[in-house]
Image (tube, rainbow, N blue to C red; front, side):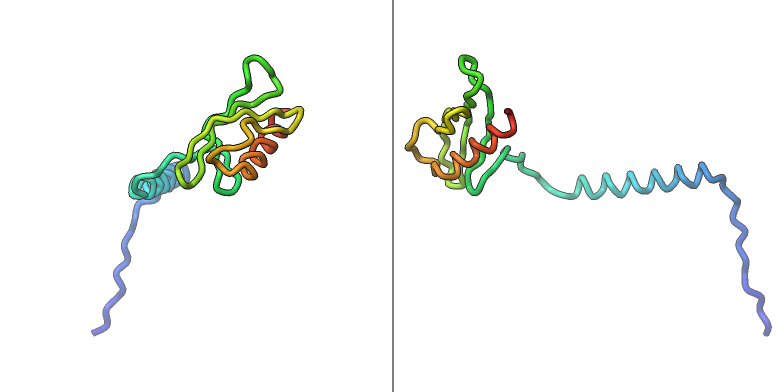
Length: 113
């Protein structure tokens, strides 16, 4: 028995239809990956070491001062003022590590000046 292979004749589709089909497949795959990722926490803001600045505003009274809302990995929260002209963090003592807090303040001062 000599059998001939079966040839299927598929209809020809245009190049734009092919591109549209690929785009639909890519978007569907993207949405599937996006929705199956699970819950995502919001990013904390700008971080240096274990200290993150969740809120960054410029002082209303003195434009060279930044008001920072800081939080560390242990959950300590503090509101501090960074004087960009003098490079001083106020208050100088608190729950959040001042070395990282000052480094973060100086980094932010470079961004805004």
